Structure formats: C-alpha cells, structure tokens
Image 1: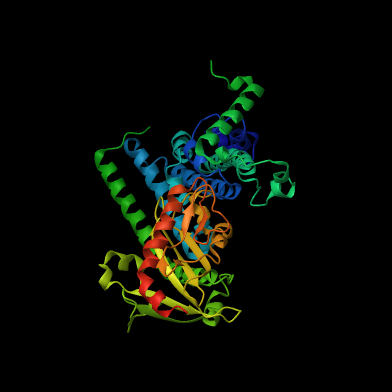
Image 2: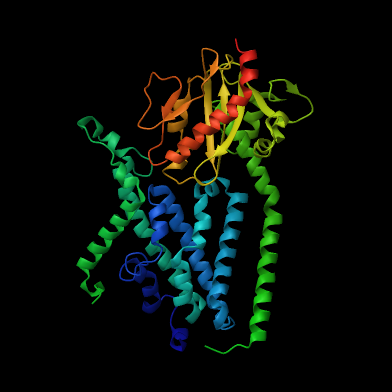
Length: 216
Length: 233
C-alpha cells in the first residue's frame, strides 16, 4: 500500500473505491450481503432511505476506526474487536438520535439495532479496513453504504408503488385515477418474499448486461 | 499478520472494554436528561393528538397547558384516589399488580369546540414489543372523540401503520358500549362495515399488531367500566 501515499486524495484508484460498489461490486447484488435487512426495510421508500443513510454512516466510521487500529488489533480476536466497534458506534448513534433528533429516532425504531447485524459492515471491516489505510477505508465505507442504499431505494420504490400505490407517501395511483378503472394495490408485494424476487430481478438484469459478473 | 502474545491480547481486550464502557456510560449519563425531556414531550404530544390537536415539538408544552385541563386517578371500582399524579403513573407497572391495587389515570381536556372530554391511556403488546396510546371520549363517555397510538418496534409499513392518521381516524365516533354493556372496538380483517360502530379495518400484513391493539383496548378500557357507566349522561 506504500504507492498509495504519493497519490492525490481523489486519484483514479481511490475513486474506484467509491464507484465500484455502486455497480460491478455491489454489496447486495454481487457480494450478496445484507439481504436480510433489505427484505425488512423496503416496504416503503422513507425507512429505506433512512436505513441506507444510517448504514453508510456506521460503515464509513467503523471502517476508519478499524483501519486506524489495524496494526494493533490481534489477529485472533479481530472479529470480536470489529463487533465491539460496530456495536459501540450503533449504540452511540442511537443515544444521540434519542437525545437530539427524537423524531428521526422514532422513525428508525428497530433498524438502529439491526444495523449491528448487517453483514455488509462486518464484511467491509474484515475484507477491506483490516488491510488498508483510514482514508481509502472511509471511501470504501461510503461507497458500499451507497451501493447498498441504491438497491434499497430501487426495491422500495417498486414495492411502495405497486403495494401501497404511493411514492414517498404521495398517492400517485390515486391521483392518476387508476382505482376508478378497477386497478387494485398488490398486497403480495408488501410481503417480505417479494423483496427477494425484486432483488433477484435486479441481479438478473445486472448480469445480463455485464457478462463478466456471471460465475463459471 | 504480526504475531501477538497472549498477554498482549488480554491487555488489548481489557483496555478496549474499559474504553468502550466508559464511552457508553458517559454518553448515556450525559444524554439522559435530554432523552427524558423528549419522552415527556412525546407523551404530551400523543395526548394532544388523541383530542385531534396537532402539535409540533416546540409548541407541545404550550398547547398541553391550554387544552389539558386536569387529571385524576381512579381505583378499579371507579372511585377517585387521592395523592397520585396521573401523569407520573406508569401503566406498565400498574398492569403487573392485581386489579384491586391498580390505579387508573384519567385526564380532562377541552379542545377548540369547548366539549369536555376525558383521555384514557392504554398499553398492550404488539408483535415485537409494547404498543400504547391515548383514547379520548366525548362527554357521554361512550363515543370516541379521537385516538393516538404508538409502538416501540412494530414493522414499518405493516404493524407500524397503527400510528398513521389513516388508521387512527377510523376510530372517530365509534362507541364502546352497546345497551349499557361494554363491547369495545374490534379490529376486523378484510375491512369493517362503515355502519359498524364497534369495528375498524385491520391492517393488511399487520394482523398480530392489529389483534394486540384490539386486546389492549378491551383490557385497558374494561377497567374503567364502572366509572364510565356511573358518570355517563
């Protein structure tokens, strides 16, 4: 990693850390991490957005902490150390939300706790931050958080539109007058398994466009 | 990867735990007053919403003083109990006691239209955790004026829909009694008949939360049965 020191803050290589997880190395569709929370929070667009933002913050900050400590963390207990850092971060975030932005904290409710178990964060700490400097780790965290978020937003957009007939709470289907023509909301889309099907469709679409992603 | 001795690992973990513990307890202690203040404001705001007054965090205290005119505490046979502040009664702790020892808080309110209302707090179980709320009754002590529900951790988009106005507004003008008998309000799967004065639509995908809410209403309000019957017009 010594060659990285001479590079500018946003070199081509570091920028790739930001952009790769959005497409070619997406945490959900390619690394297949964090699927569980993607099912739970994508019924509506709003919680999905808040969740995406919180995960991005936690993964970026934990990445920086672990990257800064990477030379001092004993190999044999590294997973425990990673978990402690994540859990501490999440609890601190939760406490601050409760004290200063109570409304947002109510909005997030259980999700704050769920962030601890999000495999993306552990995955990035283990795969990237343990071997890289804080700055690239930070970018990697932001990139992966955003890559996770983008899938959440796509899935929740369709689930909210088809399941509840709204977009971000705005009653689109009603305004279009579709209900008068006999259209009905699809209750099945609200159920968790449909999130998997949507994620599956995205994976299918992505791999049919980019053949290099198909496993041999 | 460098090799670390056992001694190093033990010291590392000990130091890490101490740092983390200090950090967390410091945060918890320092932020506690602000968090408690938030919860109190939230409680007042829920009460205001149950009498159809929309409050923001900033004007909650002011509106609470304006519209909530008093409070008192009852025992299980509907007689007033002296010396207990209704606002400080923790419903969860009361529900653990035998019925005869429980105290039942009631708040008095007068919204814009000048009607004298009472507000009754309720608490029960949803799917993942507690659900709670406030029910305001018109002066006939039978017709629901408004409700406000909230929850600790129901699934957003499903069970969490109980605190949306779409769900809460269905309770307006429903009645609790039928021919002098307590029947409560039921949550009906597949949609309630609009003429049904004791039923509202259940939440699709939130069946257990809906059922928990129905049980909460029945269990909490039935304790006020004697008071409501004695004082109704």
